[in-house]
Length: 509
Image (cartoon, rainbow, N blue to C red; front, side, top):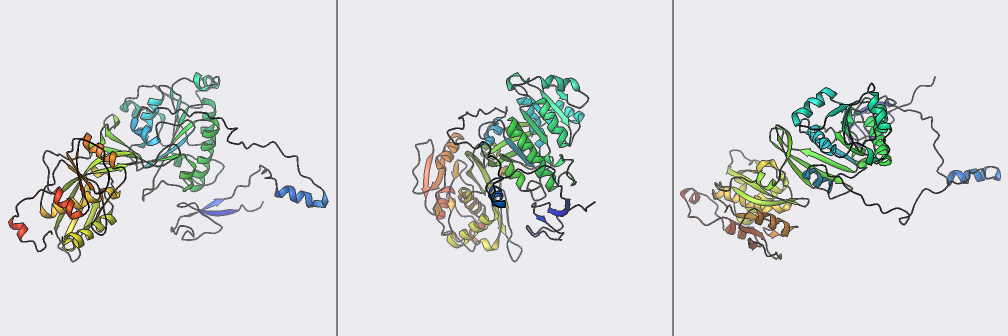
């Protein structure tokens, strides 16, 4: 019996190597190569034509090529113009990040940290979709009893029916169903990790939506590698994708994440699926962010905001109020900015704290803001405005922990730092929008009209924006500025100097 052929696969990037290395030759990760046994396929690979036909013609001067089959390719005129009807998931925030609703036959991957609420979200969405469609919830991590207990806590109204091999009546009833219109609206649960059993159940039940929780627990018995390995994740995802496209079944897949925050498994996993969503948030905070990083049926970088309550996840109708502080009692060193996540404007409060340093090099820390841009803004304030930031520790954070990394929040960061340095209060009815250049200028940003409308809707009276941009007639006062120093004068009301101010070595121009 011949010795089986082996090769090594990197668990981090999926690269293959004929021999073992302590360091992956492709991505440089240490101790990530695992041995795999190559499986010899007994299925004959069909000829691709062309080259093989030419070789057959050259053999003894006779053509042994088979008669070519009918073409399967189509032109655009031959493809039907079928209008895709999206399904409402029951949650407007999820529909937003999906581009308007669930697309039939699509494959959606949802990743997130452990305990963030991925299973809770999908169970609630499954309950909403089960009012109109047939749903199969496949769990490889929990038993049917565990899912039922969680469903009872979440207030799932649809009765859960656990599918197993012993329950033949359910299988017999579903075989008779032929069209999606005749399928009853129900929620079925299948605790299973074997891919063959899962595909057999999908073929028998014919659901409209199948939830896989999670893809790292599913395994293909023909492969010798452990569940969650690169080969298992790749093959299981490819098989599920084939079923989703051929049978027009929507697949909602949960993916585990690594300690770096990326979805575990090969990168091809994100390439195979149609949509990639990340469920983010602090486990010790109440709000959760559902962010789109890939979407073949809509815009990317959209976000949906939920709040974790005792009954599960609840949508946040007005996210701007969630990330705004108390405007009735403003504190020094705070500024209000309008950030855009995709097509959604969100008003966020930025907080800054500046104090003399006790170390040779000052400390810089940012929570929810880009660290490199923070360092750049501090350098601009020292060079162009005259604040001795090289002698001061600087801390900047966004309220609620929302990540705002776009350049439009630069002006708000700069004003918050100056206000903390002078211990001044920025007018609570003012929003700041603009990018800060290295020369101290304020540059224009995109989607200005959308940002101003959101600020006016929340009752802000003034907006300090870059100069040279045309603005619509809104119920808000526009203060265009061209330099950072002009924005400082407009944002911070004039107050008499105190004794502490007179002791400062450096003064604002």
